[in-house]
Length: 299
Image 1 (cartoon, rainbow, N blue to C red):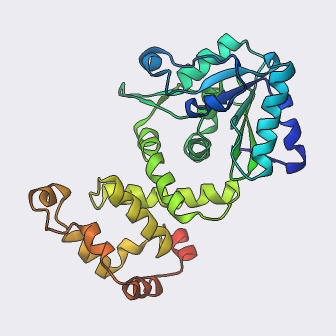
Image 2 (tube, one colour):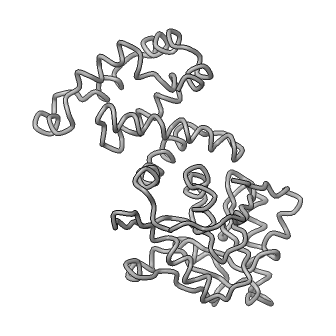
């Protein structure tokens, strides 16, 4: 996926170069008084509009409201904070068309008929979508939207709609499962990423985390969110293939299930045992496995 970094020197022009914006429900109170916004919920999400992002027609924000909105955006960026508008869109389509498309895009569906809210307005989710979806799927996701600009890790990034034929908006099983893991991947990243990372590096790291989490679920039978997050953290802080070390593998194989732990709260699960290991144990595991770069090549 082609993601373009917008230079900081152009920050002041970003708002004027877009036609629409999405604002998260929790940021509505930060907008200038009286600003018109449009609901985006459709179908099963219609009753959840108070939690969904709202659409703003930027050309209709004029005069004093425009001045206040621009100042809110600029002031937040100058102090390293998050502006109220994190997602900006370019589209020649009408507001009704864009609103309806956003409504459909945030209701993800799989080929088996399952449905789920896809937080397309959340930059942290969008980063993950750029590595999970194909160009054709992204073309379908964007629809009448020509480009999608988002604020992430202290910079603006623009994602243009791929010039390829769109595919069905229903996701196959492997894609659907990857979408379901996005929340866990982002929780791992939140624990590991104190520093600002560029988009490509973050996507590459997300791939490694996602692979570890998938392995934790499929091979080791882990299900609890906190266990999956801690497994992902170990994969990144110790070694991507840390669970292949014989001593770690033994702990994982001899695990009692979460269900067994509920029956006997004093019984340790596999992740409880891994959490109790000393720093010297993890240093031994790290030093005895091949360098992460070689492990990535072998995988």
